[in-house]
Amino acid sequence: MRIADRFQFRPVLPALAPEIHRLYLDSPTYFNLIGMEVPSLADVERELEVLEHDPRRRVSLLEQDGEVVGYLDYKLTYPEEGAATISLLLIRESLQGQGLGARALGELEARLRGQVERLFAVVYGDNPVARHFWSRQGFAHLRDSGPSLSWYVKSLA
Ligand code: ACO
Image (cartoon, rainbow, N blue to C red; front, top):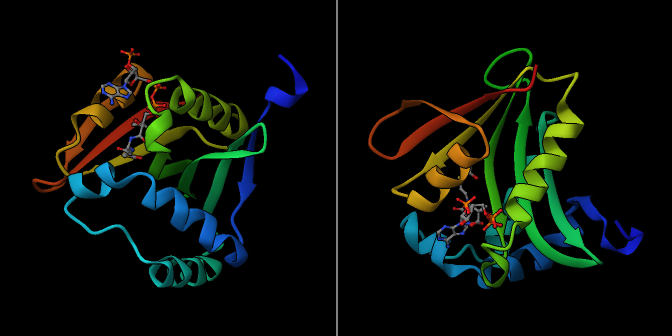
């Protein structure tokens, strides 16, 4: 693999709010699907402030060749010791279906292996593409919490 082709997880800082907002604006279908408007820049800024007070949250911009291709939000030691939970993996809409989601997840699993035994993913709403994605990535459907929340899990041990 070329060095320039390397995938980067860039930890999110408040100054990156406009870049996250741009990514959201470029990916409206996901927000339509979960029944919400695309968050405003002020919403993103507020969310990043909240995040600063949660030492277990890990939020990254996913970059390839210096270009923002996606966003990843997960939480360590949640819902239990030895676990982590992904609440959102979002690939820029124009770049979906090209293997970037699978690649980001593979890199995350490599980083977490050894410190995390069980990796969870929580899917909101009726999202068949996401359900297909997590299953193809080796996650098992664990349970539904109400009509709009599905938990998936994969062992990293
Ligand atoms: N329609 C149907 N299948 C699709 C689509 C699509 N639009 N996009 C990806 N896939 C399938 C691929 O065909 C592939 O399946 P296969 O292995 O059977 O061929 C599989 O998903 C993996 O493909 P990737 O190219 O790696 O997926 P991608 O880069 O698009 O990432 C993701 C998948 C993250 C779901 C992306 O499509 C996305 O950002 N969607 C919108 C946001 C979203 O729903 N995120 C997940 C929310 S749940 C959570 O994060 C815990």
